[in-house]
Amino acid sequence: MILLVDEENKADFLSLCSDISIMACRISCIYESYGAYDSLARFHIHYGEKGQPAAIISQYGGIVSIYCREQWCSDEIEGFLRMTGCSFAECNSPVLCSSASGVIMRLRKKPEITDERFIYNMTQPDYRSIYKLLSSCSGEGFEVPSFEDYLVEFSHRFRHGTARFCCVEKDGKILSFAMTGAMSKNCTLIGSVCTEENSRRSHIGSACLSKLISSLDSREIFIIRAKKETEAFYKSLGFENDGNYYSFNMD
Image 1 (cartoon, rainbow, N blue to C red):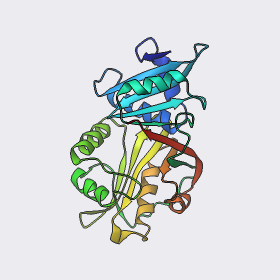
Image 2: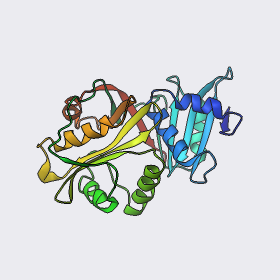
Image 3: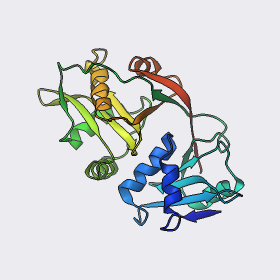
Image 4: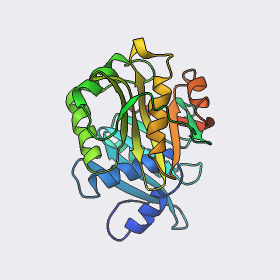
């Protein structure tokens, strides 16, 4: 049974949101950013045959995110997906999509030293300059939305405390940028890490991400990387492979 989240089942929904999983983290972050009754986002909970809360689902920005507490997915969820009208789905279960589209890495040991040679900005985002840097890295494992979509999303989550960022700056120019892609009370997904081309291989990207990580308290920290990219970079900062990320187009 799949139900829209309301006051009666909210406790069950939030219970699954608290699980240590990038998909639970993603759904929780959207919920904390927009709430259950915002027209921009919708949230559902799936109950199993024995009445236990088994999965949670969010719909936001044309994307369906699914977290299954167990590695299975019922025919009911598959049918539900076809009815959403969304174009893209992501999940933690290989049942819906047998081929992994990325690798999850989990931080096992936080970086001990933050390089204080650099100037860090973590409080006053220059949205246009950040977007310019992100756009220069587009295609290197991630795609950048339009500036309007990016500005609405980033600024909204930053104001609601569901996103954090760090910039390394020199002479008023952003050299490197790192940002959380999703945050819950006990889990964080790093979303974007990019460095200006002329500043790469100078440890600026590592310093930027390390500074961001140092602000994340005791949360479990994850990243998603492309299958054949950036593994050595993240391992040098204490991340280890921790399973697969599944996504698929629903067109």
